Structure formats: structure tokens, C-alpha cells
Length: 355
Image (cartoon, rainbow, N blue to C red; front, side, top):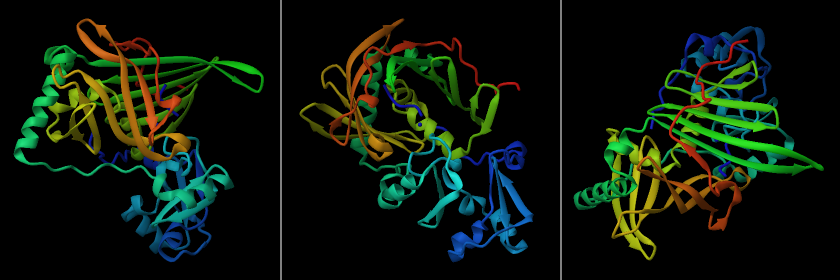
């Protein structure tokens, strides 16, 4: 199953609640001094700015103004998640940090910090640039995508489906104990995504909507940074239904690429997501999806999902089993055997829990 502990435009979401909240922690070193001059200068408690759950202290008013003018430049990256484990992981400590390529990251442990500094280029998520192709390649690409849509049930069923809910379950043994573990990925198209992880009776939720995002454990709620919302969208975009529905987006691109021994290949791109779909040439049946994402050890690399079984959901055919590889090696966390798929929102809420 896909590890969830990870094509709306990435617009800044900086409502008053997000900017004024400082419930998570404080960065006592002046981040402007860190970024601009590599100096660990203590900030003053009387000079501060709040952003997405963190309070930042500054040594002088000029630095505070610099932060407010360009907070994305100076704030802690990944919404405060551990720089080594990725934007949807647990949070790092503001006392354990590093500056890489002019950006500030925090870490959950000294080992995470060391690992990040040794592998930083493979631990940072990036959107893919918009690809280019010739007019014939673009026309053929669109044709291949429509052929896949037809095989899956037709445009009316693909485009008329508003929900996608996927459940995977397993029993995990750790320290001599057994845990009932389940993961739910739920999408209400076009822009709401929820990921719910359960370990026995404990439940953890990550929710992203066009206007808001948050993490919840019971009644405890923390704000979600837009970078973390984008990470959730990347998980959503690994699903075939998302890719096929995305052909209606105004920025969608489909480009025919060279065929392989496995079948016809079409590169699709929308909102920063890029993937190559391999299709059966005669029928348009989707055979696999290849993209770039997080896999073994939270590293960013090549992900391939090979579809091994499809289910029929009222005339809409979708993958229910797939074999995942990461950088060419089998990966259990990216695989699924008979995932439970439903096209409804039973048990799903995109509202913040009430305290």
C-alpha cells in the first residue's frame, strides 16, 4: 500500500488564522540572519512574526520587515516537517536545523540532519516543469488519453465521478505486539483530499481543501502549510482516475513518447505533476504509471506502478491491485493487493474537528 504518512494551483493560503497561530513552536534564532549572513543571532521576544503555527523572533526591526515582505524565503521549510522524512512526516525541532540552498530546514533527530545534508538533492520534492512536444505528438497524446478513458468506461463515467475512496488494511507486528493498521485516501474532486491513518483505536487525519489544510489527532489540530498541501496532491495524483479526469484542466498536456516493448507511452502533465502512462496499443488499457516521488527511505526517485487487477464500479474500471517499484526495485509500501475502492464519501469529513 502507498505510505500516506505524503491539480490545484499552488496559491498562497495566508488567512488570518494561519498567520496569527503560533501553537506549534518558536524559532528563537533570527532566521533572516541565518539565511542572509549564516549567523546564529538570537532574536528579541518583543520583535516577532507568526506564520503557520510558528513564531519567529528577530534581532532588529529591519529583519522583521524583511521576513514579512518575503516569508517564503525565510520561514522554516516543509511547514516544519522533518527535512529528511518529508513534508507529511512528523515535525522537526526548531533547535535542530540546517540551511541548504538558502532555505531553512528542521529535523526530528541528529541522524535526520546528517542524512539530509548528505542527500539533500534527493530529499526535496519539486514540481515537474511543463514538457514540450511537437503538434503531432500533442495530438497523438490526447488521442491516447481518450482511448484510455474509453477503456475505463467512457468520458461520462470518468468525468461524472465526484468521489474516490481507497482503503488498505494490514496487521503490523512491532515489539511483540500486533497493530491493526489501515490507510484511507479520499478525494472529492476537484480539490479536496483527506488521508486517514488508524493504528488500533488511534486515528490521525491530514486534510487539504482549496481554502484550508490541517492535521488532526482527536481534537488536536495543527495548521497545514501550502507545501504540505501540495505533497498531499502528489499522493492523489498517483491515482489513475485523477490523471484521466485532469485532461479537462486548462493546463493539461499529453504528449506521445516513443513506444516501448510494454506498450504505447504518453506523458501527461498538469499543475506540476508529470507521469508517463503505458497503454495496451490495441485497446488503450492502462498497464502502468511512471512518475517521480518519495519511496524507500523517503528519498525522491522513480516510482512505477504496474496494474495487475482492475475492478468494475458501475461501469467504471479502476485498478485495485498494483505492483510498485522504486528506482527499479520492488517496493511493498508502494504496492497494493486488492485495495478496497469506493466512489463515495462515507465516513469522510473535510471540516476541522471541534475542540
